[in-house]
Image (cartoon, rainbow over all chains, first blue to last red; front, side, top):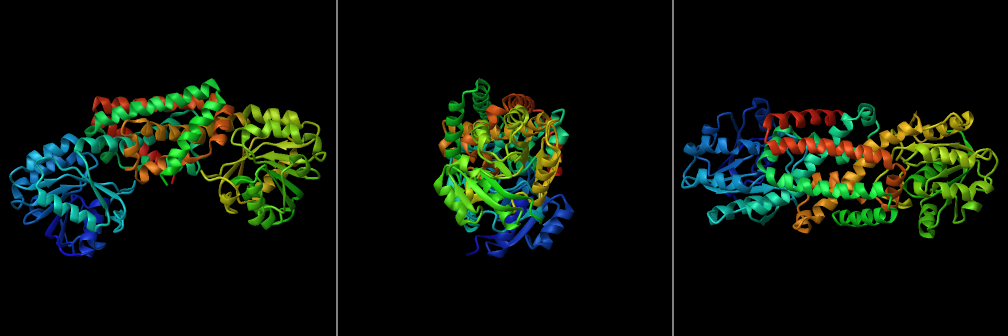
Length: 286
Length: 286
């Protein structure tokens, strides 16, 4: 892999940022990787694991001279961080992000960086309920999709560089509009997280809930694994993609209630037909 | 392990029945294991994998002389099969089952076998979305809970034998009433299956559903893994444990709607608090 960047600054060296930094170092994609974060412990962890060359708690200092800046902090911090770092960015630096929400946020970030840096909105669809540099995995993005959501204003060369960056990690790069991205992600990620959180909450709230959880086996654990995800991340996502999440929750409610009605009616044939149809859809995904 | 039974007849040599048969043979728990089923292919598979000593498509013949009969077919078939085999059972044979529903069904089966055989209702909480003898696993029950739901009429010695059988598989045997069993299983297994089926259905039903499913990553796949479970099994469970499933679906709906309301209101602090609380509950389960 040839070098794409001289100095990469990664803001937030958690699971995604840490993994990306480690790959950039291992494969020589960047000459130097600076990890920026607030937690000294996590930065030390990232340094110790060789995910970054340098740790920096001051974002303003960390981004100076960088020709690539990647926003990997919780998506709810993006605007604040963008405004903070903007005056310290190198002219025409490529700025990208890994946020799970694009939509209006991508346009606002574009406006903030306008005329100073070249912003390319991106979202690698990879992750886990685990967090922090200790969860970093240099094979995390291999085979995963990475969606870029360029707009009419996106710089073509910067878009090419960010495409090269993600392809170098092993991800499959695709493009769509920020709006389409947010609708799709609400359906297959954001709403299902809310559904999993609600499932744990529902069982715990029942009179026999505490005891019942002791009998949960693999099925329940798989179904609710993502309910162990961090609340800061999911608060931000839910608020930033609120409209699509509400819309998909309503569709979920409709599907759930349709099954509930069939169960209540006792229509064995209809129930078998519905479950069978859904099983086939789900089985095709493996 | 000392021998507990001379001849065990397993009706339904799928994942659970096949695994149990294989364990009984491997560990000498039964002198002889007869597998009973309608699918010749599946029986051949069970024979080929050494899960049973003998294959039999006629249940009436298969159960003759058996001192243990285990109902491992779909729970919706239990009553029909019980009536069919009753005249052919050895007097005082121990009959047990692995059904996911107990409740009224356990009492009805007890009535059917009364004065002929000694019925002990049981439910090993183990499984997978996979099915058939090809999915059998001789370590399937190790560390899993197996709930026995004896009633006032249950024969004490038969109860002891079934307890010994499940402990020999490595399961942790517990007892509760059939009614408590059904409420708990509705909460941690039956309702979550309906929730997972509905989740796949909701996404597929959206205008952009087909495309969206192509972007589903690990989170969605885990959350909906059990929606690949077989429709016959889940139709039966949903109909037999209908009241508890409706009750727990209503509790789920309430929890889901509470989160939806917070998301819609945009109350960041409340959302963070709720997600954090639920994350802690879920994290304690691992």
